[in-house]
Image 1 (cartoon, rainbow, N blue to C red):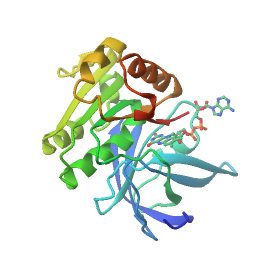
Image 2 (cartoon, rainbow, N blue to C red):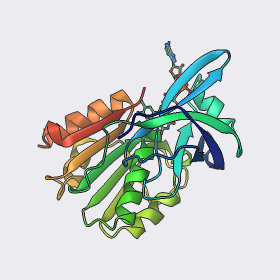
Image 3 (cartoon, helix red, strand yellow):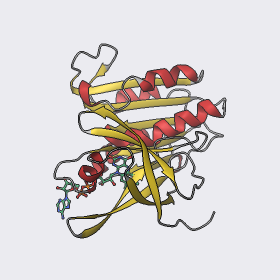
Amino acid sequence: MSKPELQDAKIVKYVRETKDTHTMRLELSRPFHWEPGQFIMVQAEINGESVRRAYSVASSPTRPYLEITVRQTENPTMSKYLNERKEGDILRIKGPYGRFIMDPTKPVFCIAAGSGITPFRAMLQYCIDKKLDIPYKLLYSCRYGDNVIYEKELPNLIKQYPHASYELSITRDKMGLDYVREGRINQDYLADQIKGFEDGKFYLCGTPGFIKSMIEFLIANGIPRDAIKREQWG
Ligand SMILES: Cc1cc2nc3c(=O)[nH]c(=O)nc-3n(C[C@H](O)[C@H](O)[C@H](O)COP(=O)(O)OP(=O)(O)OC[C@H]3O[C@@H](n4cnc5c(N)ncnc54)[C@H](O)[C@@H]3O)c2cc1C
Protein backbone atom coordinates (compact mmCIF):
# COMPACT_ATOMS: atom_id res chain seq x y z
CA MET A 1 0.00 0.00 0.00
CA SER A 2 1.38 3.44 -0.90
CA LYS A 3 2.23 5.98 1.80
CA PRO A 4 -0.71 8.20 2.86
CA GLU A 5 -0.51 11.72 1.45
CA LEU A 6 -2.21 14.91 2.56
CA GLN A 7 -5.01 15.77 0.15
CA ASP A 8 -8.16 17.85 -0.28
CA ALA A 9 -11.50 16.18 0.38
CA LYS A 10 -14.75 17.94 -0.44
CA ILE A 11 -17.77 17.48 1.81
CA VAL A 12 -20.45 16.38 -0.66
CA LYS A 13 -23.07 15.33 1.86
CA TYR A 14 -23.60 16.44 5.42
CA VAL A 15 -26.15 14.60 7.59
CA ARG A 16 -27.15 15.31 11.16
CA GLU A 17 -27.26 12.06 13.17
CA THR A 18 -28.01 13.35 16.70
CA LYS A 19 -27.94 16.76 18.36
CA ASP A 20 -24.13 16.70 18.56
CA THR A 21 -23.13 14.28 15.79
CA HIS A 22 -22.84 14.59 11.99
CA THR A 23 -21.86 12.29 9.15
CA MET A 24 -19.77 13.80 6.36
CA ARG A 25 -19.43 12.17 2.96
CA LEU A 26 -16.09 13.09 1.41
CA GLU A 27 -15.04 13.23 -2.22
CA LEU A 28 -11.31 12.58 -2.29
CA SER A 29 -9.08 14.37 -4.76
CA ARG A 30 -6.85 11.27 -4.77
CA PRO A 31 -9.01 8.22 -3.93
CA PHE A 32 -7.37 5.41 -1.95
CA HIS A 33 -8.37 1.98 -0.75
CA TRP A 34 -9.05 1.35 2.93
CA GLU A 35 -9.95 -1.73 4.96
CA PRO A 36 -13.08 -1.85 7.15
CA GLY A 37 -12.00 -0.54 10.58
CA GLN A 38 -9.25 1.84 9.45
CA PHE A 39 -9.17 5.58 10.12
CA ILE A 40 -8.09 8.83 8.46
CA MET A 41 -6.41 11.90 9.91
CA VAL A 42 -8.09 15.29 9.48
CA GLN A 43 -5.88 18.37 9.65
CA ALA A 44 -6.98 22.00 10.06
CA GLU A 45 -5.80 25.41 11.21
CA ILE A 46 -7.93 26.23 14.24
CA ASN A 47 -7.34 29.43 16.21
CA GLY A 48 -3.92 29.80 14.62
CA GLU A 49 -2.79 26.27 15.46
CA SER A 50 -2.39 23.24 13.27
CA VAL A 51 -4.64 20.49 14.69
CA ARG A 52 -4.73 16.81 13.63
CA ARG A 53 -7.27 14.25 14.80
CA ALA A 54 -8.13 10.67 13.85
CA TYR A 55 -11.57 9.63 12.57
CA SER A 56 -12.57 6.07 11.75
CA VAL A 57 -13.92 5.57 8.28
CA ALA A 58 -17.61 4.93 8.88
CA SER A 59 -18.33 3.51 5.43
CA SER A 60 -17.17 0.27 3.83
CA PRO A 61 -14.55 0.30 1.04
CA THR A 62 -17.18 -1.54 -1.03
CA ARG A 63 -19.20 1.71 -1.23
CA PRO A 64 -18.27 4.40 -3.74
CA TYR A 65 -17.74 7.01 -1.03
CA LEU A 66 -15.85 7.63 2.20
CA GLU A 67 -17.77 8.86 5.24
CA ILE A 68 -16.79 9.92 8.74
CA THR A 69 -19.14 10.51 11.65
CA VAL A 70 -18.05 13.03 14.25
CA ARG A 71 -19.46 13.63 17.71
CA GLN A 72 -18.70 16.98 19.30
CA THR A 73 -16.98 16.40 22.64
CA GLU A 74 -16.89 18.63 25.71
CA ASN A 75 -14.38 21.48 25.30
CA PRO A 76 -13.97 20.55 21.67
CA THR A 77 -11.42 21.65 19.09
CA MET A 78 -11.56 19.64 15.86
CA SER A 79 -14.95 18.09 16.58
CA LYS A 80 -16.51 21.57 16.86
CA TYR A 81 -14.73 22.71 13.72
CA LEU A 82 -16.06 19.68 11.80
CA ASN A 83 -19.56 19.99 13.16
CA GLU A 84 -19.65 23.58 11.87
CA ARG A 85 -18.77 22.61 8.30
CA LYS A 86 -21.27 22.45 5.44
CA GLU A 87 -21.63 20.82 2.04
CA GLY A 88 -19.05 22.15 -0.42
CA ASP A 89 -16.37 22.82 2.22
CA ILE A 90 -12.92 21.31 1.72
CA LEU A 91 -11.11 19.31 4.40
CA ARG A 92 -7.44 18.36 4.45
CA ILE A 93 -7.13 14.63 5.13
CA LYS A 94 -4.60 11.84 5.07
CA GLY A 95 -5.02 8.09 5.19
CA PRO A 96 -5.75 5.29 5.56
CA TYR A 97 -4.19 4.27 8.86
CA GLY A 98 -4.57 1.59 11.49
CA ARG A 99 -4.51 -2.11 12.18
CA PHE A 100 -8.03 -2.34 13.61
CA ILE A 101 -9.08 -4.30 10.55
CA MET A 102 -11.89 -6.82 10.27
CA ASP A 103 -10.84 -10.40 9.56
CA PRO A 104 -13.47 -11.55 7.01
CA THR A 105 -12.74 -15.24 7.66
CA LYS A 106 -13.76 -15.35 11.34
CA PRO A 107 -17.03 -14.62 13.19
CA VAL A 108 -17.12 -10.90 14.02
CA PHE A 109 -18.18 -9.79 17.49
CA CYS A 110 -18.26 -5.99 17.94
CA ILE A 111 -18.73 -3.99 21.13
CA ALA A 112 -19.11 -0.21 20.86
CA ALA A 113 -19.72 2.63 23.26
CA GLY A 114 -20.99 6.05 22.15
CA SER A 115 -19.25 7.37 19.04
CA GLY A 116 -17.16 4.15 18.99
CA ILE A 117 -19.87 2.74 16.74
CA THR A 118 -18.38 4.24 13.55
CA PRO A 119 -15.93 1.48 12.44
CA PHE A 120 -18.62 -1.15 13.03
CA ARG A 121 -20.98 0.49 10.55
CA ALA A 122 -18.20 0.10 7.97
CA MET A 123 -17.67 -3.56 8.92
CA LEU A 124 -21.37 -4.34 8.71
CA GLN A 125 -21.72 -2.69 5.30
CA TYR A 126 -18.72 -4.74 4.20
CA CYS A 127 -20.32 -8.04 5.33
CA ILE A 128 -23.50 -7.11 3.41
CA ASP A 129 -21.80 -5.97 0.21
CA LYS A 130 -19.37 -8.90 0.08
CA LYS A 131 -22.18 -11.35 0.95
CA LEU A 132 -19.94 -12.96 3.55
CA ASP A 133 -21.25 -15.99 5.40
CA ILE A 134 -19.68 -15.36 8.80
CA PRO A 135 -21.73 -14.40 11.87
CA TYR A 136 -21.66 -10.70 12.82
CA LYS A 137 -22.86 -9.48 16.20
CA LEU A 138 -22.98 -5.89 17.40
CA LEU A 139 -23.48 -4.80 21.00
CA TYR A 140 -23.83 -1.05 21.29
CA SER A 141 -23.95 0.89 24.55
CA CYS A 142 -25.16 4.50 24.85
CA ARG A 143 -26.13 6.62 27.81
CA TYR A 144 -29.34 8.11 26.43
CA GLY A 145 -31.89 7.09 23.84
CA ASP A 146 -31.42 10.36 22.00
CA ASN A 147 -27.67 9.98 21.50
CA VAL A 148 -27.74 6.66 19.66
CA ILE A 149 -25.84 7.21 16.40
CA TYR A 150 -27.39 5.54 13.28
CA GLU A 151 -30.46 4.77 15.41
CA LYS A 152 -32.70 4.05 12.40
CA GLU A 153 -29.97 2.88 10.04
CA LEU A 154 -28.42 0.09 12.13
CA PRO A 155 -31.57 -2.08 12.42
CA ASN A 156 -32.02 -1.71 8.64
CA LEU A 157 -28.44 -2.77 7.91
CA ILE A 158 -28.81 -5.74 10.27
CA LYS A 159 -31.83 -6.92 8.26
CA GLN A 160 -29.73 -6.90 5.08
CA TYR A 161 -27.18 -9.39 6.44
CA PRO A 162 -28.70 -12.79 7.26
CA HIS A 163 -25.97 -13.68 9.79
CA ALA A 164 -26.21 -10.44 11.78
CA SER A 165 -27.58 -9.66 15.21
CA TYR A 166 -27.67 -6.43 17.16
CA GLU A 167 -28.49 -5.35 20.68
CA LEU A 168 -28.57 -1.79 21.98
CA SER A 169 -28.01 -1.13 25.70
CA ILE A 170 -28.99 2.19 27.27
CA THR A 171 -27.34 2.94 30.59
CA ARG A 172 -29.23 6.05 31.77
CA ASP A 173 -32.50 6.99 30.06
CA LYS A 174 -33.92 5.16 27.06
CA MET A 175 -36.10 8.18 26.23
CA GLY A 176 -38.90 6.23 24.61
CA LEU A 177 -36.81 3.73 22.63
CA ASP A 178 -38.81 0.58 23.26
CA TYR A 179 -36.57 -2.10 21.74
CA VAL A 180 -33.51 -1.54 23.91
CA ARG A 181 -31.95 -3.38 26.81
CA GLU A 182 -31.41 -1.29 29.94
CA GLY A 183 -28.12 -1.34 31.85
CA ARG A 184 -24.42 -1.56 31.26
CA ILE A 185 -22.71 -4.33 29.34
CA ASN A 186 -21.42 -6.58 32.12
CA GLN A 187 -19.71 -9.94 32.48
CA ASP A 188 -22.88 -12.03 32.85
CA TYR A 189 -24.53 -10.39 29.87
CA LEU A 190 -21.42 -10.99 27.76
CA ALA A 191 -21.18 -14.64 28.90
CA ASP A 192 -24.57 -15.16 27.30
CA GLN A 193 -23.93 -13.07 24.18
CA ILE A 194 -20.62 -14.68 23.18
CA LYS A 195 -22.13 -18.16 22.78
CA GLY A 196 -21.34 -19.32 19.25
CA PHE A 197 -18.51 -16.77 18.88
CA GLU A 198 -15.89 -18.69 20.87
CA ASP A 199 -13.73 -19.03 17.74
CA GLY A 200 -14.37 -15.49 16.54
CA LYS A 201 -12.58 -12.17 16.69
CA PHE A 202 -13.68 -9.52 19.16
CA TYR A 203 -13.51 -5.84 18.20
CA LEU A 204 -13.86 -3.13 20.85
CA CYS A 205 -14.17 0.59 20.25
CA GLY A 206 -14.72 3.38 22.77
CA THR A 207 -13.04 5.16 25.66
CA PRO A 208 -10.10 3.61 27.54
CA GLY A 209 -12.25 2.83 30.60
CA PHE A 210 -14.89 1.06 28.53
CA ILE A 211 -12.32 -0.96 26.63
CA LYS A 212 -10.50 -2.00 29.81
CA SER A 213 -13.75 -3.32 31.34
CA MET A 214 -14.75 -5.18 28.17
CA ILE A 215 -11.35 -6.89 27.93
CA GLU A 216 -11.59 -8.00 31.55
CA PHE A 217 -15.09 -9.40 31.03
CA LEU A 218 -14.17 -11.21 27.82
CA ILE A 219 -11.07 -12.77 29.33
CA ALA A 220 -13.02 -13.80 32.45
CA ASN A 221 -15.46 -15.49 30.06
CA GLY A 222 -12.66 -17.52 28.46
CA ILE A 223 -11.92 -15.45 25.33
CA PRO A 224 -8.17 -15.52 24.54
CA ARG A 225 -6.46 -12.14 24.64
CA ASP A 226 -5.13 -12.52 21.10
CA ALA A 227 -8.70 -12.81 19.77
CA ILE A 228 -9.44 -9.27 20.99
CA LYS A 229 -8.72 -6.16 18.91
CA ARG A 230 -9.34 -2.64 20.13
CA GLU A 231 -9.51 0.93 18.91
CA GLN A 232 -9.14 3.27 21.83
CA TRP A 233 -10.29 6.90 21.72
CA GLY A 234 -9.18 9.55 24.13
C1 LIG B 1 -8.22 5.87 15.87
C2 LIG B 1 -9.26 6.89 16.31
C3 LIG B 1 -10.47 6.97 15.64
C4 LIG B 1 -11.40 7.92 16.03
N1 LIG B 1 -12.60 7.98 15.37
C5 LIG B 1 -13.55 8.87 15.76
C6 LIG B 1 -14.83 8.90 15.09
O1 LIG B 1 -15.12 8.13 14.16
N2 LIG B 1 -15.74 9.83 15.52
C7 LIG B 1 -15.47 10.70 16.56
O2 LIG B 1 -16.35 11.52 16.88
N3 LIG B 1 -14.28 10.69 17.21
C8 LIG B 1 -13.31 9.80 16.82
N4 LIG B 1 -12.09 9.78 17.46
C9 LIG B 1 -11.79 10.84 18.46
C10 LIG B 1 -11.22 12.06 17.73
O3 LIG B 1 -9.93 11.77 17.21
C11 LIG B 1 -11.03 13.29 18.65
O4 LIG B 1 -10.30 12.89 19.78
C12 LIG B 1 -12.34 13.91 19.09
O5 LIG B 1 -13.10 14.35 17.95
C13 LIG B 1 -12.08 15.13 20.02
O6 LIG B 1 -11.23 16.01 19.36
P1 LIG B 1 -11.31 17.60 19.62
O7 LIG B 1 -10.16 18.20 18.88
O8 LIG B 1 -12.68 18.15 19.37
O9 LIG B 1 -11.13 17.71 21.18
P2 LIG B 1 -9.77 17.88 21.96
O10 LIG B 1 -9.29 19.25 21.84
O11 LIG B 1 -8.84 16.80 21.56
O12 LIG B 1 -10.28 17.63 23.43
C14 LIG B 1 -11.02 16.42 23.75
C15 LIG B 1 -11.27 16.40 25.24
O13 LIG B 1 -10.02 16.28 25.91
C16 LIG B 1 -9.90 17.33 26.82
N5 LIG B 1 -8.52 17.80 26.76
C17 LIG B 1 -7.86 18.23 25.66
N6 LIG B 1 -6.61 18.59 25.97
C18 LIG B 1 -6.49 18.38 27.29
C19 LIG B 1 -5.43 18.56 28.22
N7 LIG B 1 -4.23 19.04 27.83
N8 LIG B 1 -5.63 18.23 29.51
C20 LIG B 1 -6.83 17.74 29.90
N9 LIG B 1 -7.87 17.55 29.07
C21 LIG B 1 -7.70 17.87 27.80
C22 LIG B 1 -10.84 18.41 26.37
O14 LIG B 1 -11.31 19.17 27.46
C23 LIG B 1 -11.95 17.64 25.74
O15 LIG B 1 -12.94 17.29 26.67
C24 LIG B 1 -11.13 8.81 17.11
C25 LIG B 1 -9.90 8.72 17.77
C26 LIG B 1 -8.98 7.78 17.39
C27 LIG B 1 -7.68 7.70 18.14
